[in-house]
Image (cartoon, rainbow, N blue to C red; front, top):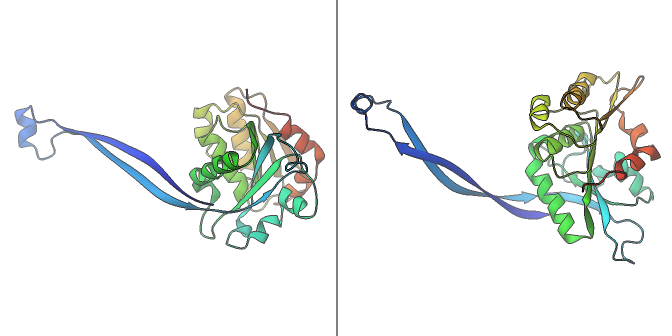
Length: 245
């Protein structure tokens, strides 16, 4: 996907020279207004799986955005099928939703690419028959961080989210008072991303009154807390049970 996104930056500057003391002071106070339109290109490779029956009906389908881990970054799209639901789809598993898996460029990080990811979600929603009341995001490790970041910055977009062995900005999560249904997962013996990273985010949501948050800790799991999660049919039932009004 190649897309150009633009946004406006607004800053006001007004000189304040009415006071004699301020006129003599080289550091006199000024207020300002600066306005500029900023545009940049977005380039994202992605792999898309359409559900059985998509071509033979006019039905709208849920969309699941899957964010891979740091080891799958680059420009070889086959890497996005190493783990997660894309691995299962590549092996022939049929899902009752549209599955899209972008690939993070080698030197980038999902949590810093939320605008790019939202542009991709909007592109897929406009290109395919997507039920926009049923948008979901899940990811592992770096993708877990990306999942937390996306729902924190875009709290009204997704119907549910499932971050796995990730972390995020718990202060911002409290500020945004996230009410989105979340099921987080982590291995108790994770040597890469400490369990405390998920605990902080889950606690932040609970402290703001989110009663829909769930948290599963695998007592004997290390960093790989995703294989058991994505192999569990109950995970997909939970995810798809949620929709936005």
